[in-house]
Image 1 (cartoon, protein in one colour):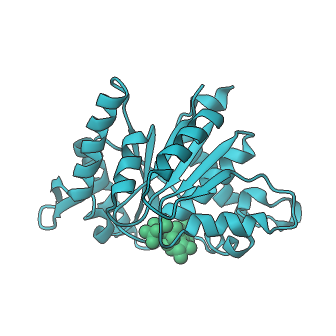
Image 2 (image 1 turned 90 degrees about the vertical axis):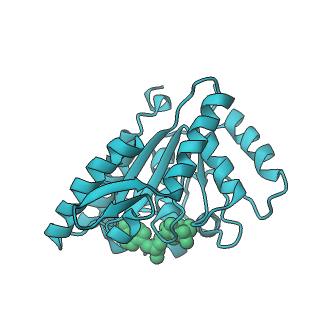
Length: 250
Ligand SMILES: Nc1ncnc2c1ncn2[C@@H]1O[C@H](COP(=O)(O)OP(=O)(O)OP(=O)(O)O)[C@@H](O)[C@H]1O
Ligand SMILES: [Mg+2]
């Protein structure tokens, strides 16, 4: 059996790709799956830093088989092929701008997850919006990239498709009006672009406070867990459920 491939992608920076990648990895490990991970953000390497911090922890933690790519020199394809054979799931984090490797990774995805901050600026990176009529006008560059990579994957893997999930990130309880307008536009966008919208993560300090320790709320137990940790843990589990991974049934 070959691994299910999850790619985190969005050509806009700072939307939560690396944060979501780490939490999805921790959630999958928590399910007892074997996880491989690849960091294609050659410069920042946020996911690699997270996993490096994790390896220094004195707790007994499960970690993914992680490869940090630092150059676009063919190493990625070798590492990917190895992990795809060896693991149940491979999670790939991509940079927040257009790169050849990032685009290539999209064509390998079974599931593409695009985190989106709840703002019209972020939405604009996926589709142009007519602000007067509050309507979607046309797909953006990134949506076109995804479209092309979907076609590429169909050609390469005989009709296989990419399940594109747009996850809303940093949702807050404030600003109900903005949230409602976003919901209407996202609903229309999902039909136009062929993606699914899932709730994703709330705006919570705990998605960042554990970075230096390399931990996530999936790794905490007992008295360490606050109500907010529990709520976040549920958000991660709900996101993983939304992916409908067949390897979870084994
Ligand atoms: N749900 C959340 N709650 C609170 N803070 C968050 C949440 N998601 C992400 N952040 C914070 O937002 C910032 C950007 O997140 P992250 O680095 O994961 O984004 P990214 O898309 O990987 O960025 P880049 O495009 O630069 O790689 C970080 O400071 C992170 O801690
Ligand atoms: Mg990142």
